[in-house]
Image (cartoon, rainbow, N blue to C red; front, top):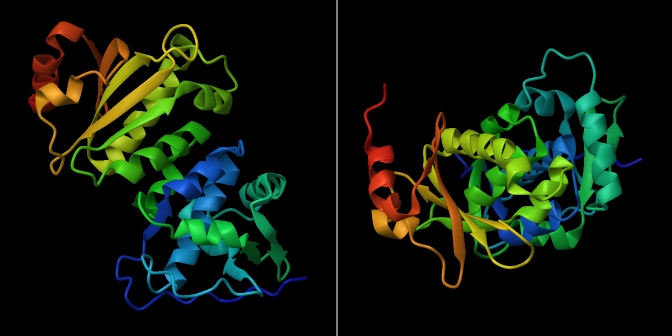
Length: 279
């Protein structure tokens, strides 16, 4: 049995809800086919690790050989489950993470009151890897109800602080998380819903270019561009196609609305959409 180590917050982390994820870390995590509980638990553990590491940019500490730990009640609070009498959500997450082989070990200790783990060393280092990386807030976690929600949240969180935030997502992997064929009309409602959840948390809007890049018939890629008060997109650039890509459709998404616009009038329509007066 591994004895859980008590985590102590780093003194120079005043915003205790924040944690850091790098793109290389997310790439590995999202290639393992984790479900909702596995993804949520991994975010909880990433937050717990970040709170004890004093420098997120120049990693100067090694992961303890004895591993780390956290009280299960703390994790349940972050999930909005503090009144639950059991750890079922955590149990399901543990099983998914064991299957994914991302940890040297992970499991309950102290009569199921604590969770103990040791992340693989290569993943520990990637968690604090060099750019690109993003900051996330653990208070967002309880609102996500599907693996796709967290996958999109991770990808957008990596790019959102850029001057012109943009990410291109292959639809195949996201279709697998939904258990569906990778056809846009089968995925549209879930992808839009996931984008709206992230838009609300990041206080941003999304321009979605649905592209044909030739990996299969029809739309195979979604290029997402974020617009918020700190981004530096022009209206024309927001809707301009990527080089050598055919754009089939353009969607404008905010936390409540999704609008499909004519490609010829996309820049003007986008300006009207994002500057309209809320009803």
